[in-house]
Image (cartoon, rainbow, N blue to C red; front, side, top):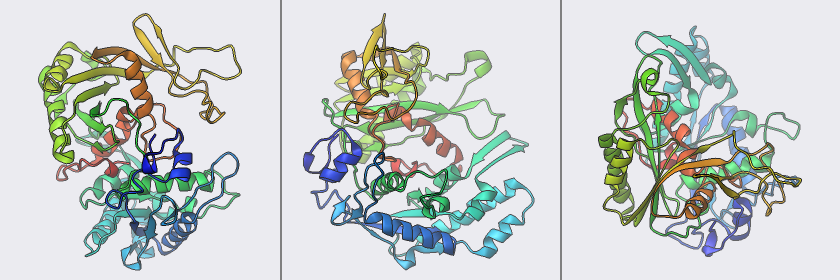
Length: 454
């Protein structure tokens, strides 16, 4: 990965600690300050503000978790947090009592979403609005609305999640959100079910930096001008509809910039056609064509090469539609990749296969994106790793290049400072994005910027 001043390191945490975030040397691409708004009760806001203030100066590790270097103008991310008293909205005792007095959990959920949404609106309408809103939601509110399951006459069985609903609501006001739970901000060394404070700080400030316009790190790619697109699907809220939607065309360029695009609805009968949805030729061509157009509109760049990742094989019509959509691009690769826990490579050694191990059985290629990491001298996932399976590839690049790019894309998770994920970013966030998409009201247009979904 690439960090400040173009310096490289394999670890997000070590790279930022030594070199600072990507573009730290640029006055136009690196944010000098982070304007933070806060929503919560008097107590939860106070504890969140104290936690942010204390953590921003640096947090000592414990031998397992690396020291967090801080979030200040002279250390760590080299950005100063600003928490003005005018960027606070209180959830009062009476407002929480009114929600608690409702009988049905469904009503409590809906009113809680409305309450927090209205607080976000008030912050977004300020003359000098915050760049990101930290939701320091009190435990007393969350006990009423964390999740809800109910039966709807039209939709059937419905499951809703408060975090996803709030992310969707925030798009009305075009302000990204960061969640800091009360049990995290008030945790002590003896608290249970809370990560070490340095780990919490790493994840919180990494996500925060991205949402205020910073770039924590960039991928080191050997194929400049490449656009990586992940395609996945999701059903709408409720169990009664046979309609599926393209979850997203998640597009990332070789600098890590990303956009999100929701496709059109289409019918998919699982009982007749199987659990894995597929597009027809017209739908596939339209989705990727629109994704390329949106990317070019947002970045003012035209890709030299397009790589499409999908977690199932390409059906003939789908393949033809994708190929037609990228027919004007000099090079392309269409790749099917998914986790496979039925095939494993066993070593005659004390540790499992190394991360980055690639092997083939017949025409199917396997890639370990988890496993033993020599640079860390550790096996951080703590379980027997499963490889990704690459069983469908159409295009120009070698399978070795395809695997190298997938490996690089597992390190592009700016919602965490962990070493790497198991899946490439093109597919890693497909479920998270689709869950937020499902909650977006019909009168709200999904925003393309990735920061609103994580």
